[in-house]
Length: 325
Ligand SMILES: NC(=O)c1ccc[n+]([C@@H]2O[C@H](COP(=O)([O-])OP(=O)(O)OC[C@H]3O[C@@H](n4cnc5c(N)ncnc54)[C@H](O)[C@@H]3O)[C@@H](O)[C@H]2O)c1
Image (cartoon, rainbow, N blue to C red; front, side, top):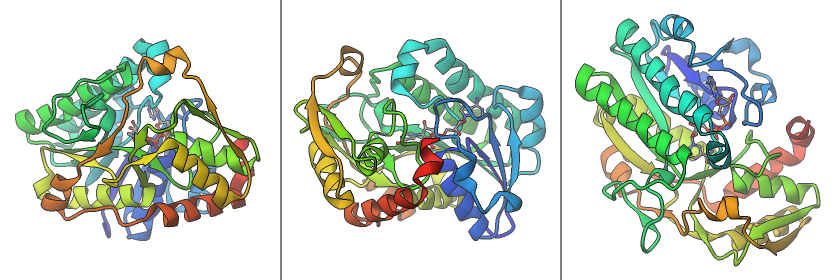
């Protein structure tokens, strides 16, 4: 990373800001591009204390004039900008397609024309696969997303792979599981359920879980994601590849919620019926088989659930006002 010129799209958001700070610590020159999309994790507090060290461009990946300029001379692009809500993707599918499909092609075209040797790490989602029998997700399975968000992320992943095959752009897609950790948005239940539950507990509110609460999730701490993204940016073996990224362990939502209540010492778990708009797009149990990334890149999750929860709760207890305003 030292001396590398890095662009992070969506860099004011949850994962992007954690990644930006890590890249700075490793000696990279970091530029963030973000349009501060409402109701996402975009938040200037995410980069508090690092503002002076970063170049921040408030702009949109759908602006081709801007993209043609901003990709020039970059060594690495971490491409995280996205419409990130499953629910919103069903309420406003055209917005999802505009950002998650058209916006991605604009970025890839800008790279093809202005910086074809750049490395691009894209963040896909394990929900591109949809529901699977037995609940264990592998890269070789047929993709069958349950919502427009999953379909758009899949299309965009395919665009990245096409630009690798057709033009030699060094692209990698990491399909992320449910990510939690410091700097996530905690106001809105439309995405990032674990972070939202932590916020609820800290405020002493009810943590509502859809019945029966036994649905399994694979949750991963953001620092593990950041390590994988940096590794993928450095390794040529990652070019043109898709990797699942998770802890490889299943934990039920009710167990997560109970642990959060216990660790925070506040809040109460309450089971509620599924609202139809959520039930229709629920993917069921999901645990990721991360054997491929372990074998090819040598990555595996290092942060235990207990340690990850401790770090996350400590962060939000200290910074709550910055995340509820
Ligand atoms: N957090 C998770 O659990 C998770 C799981 C799977 C995949 N992902 C993917 O990881 C990436 C980052 O997610 P996150 O959790 O950090 O979300 P986030 O909402 O915190 O960050 C997304 C950022 O993208 C920005 N953005 C949205 N549209 C943009 C546009 N048109 N131009 C420029 N910036 C734009 C937003 O303003 C926001 O800052 C996304 O691509 C998401 O699909 C996240």
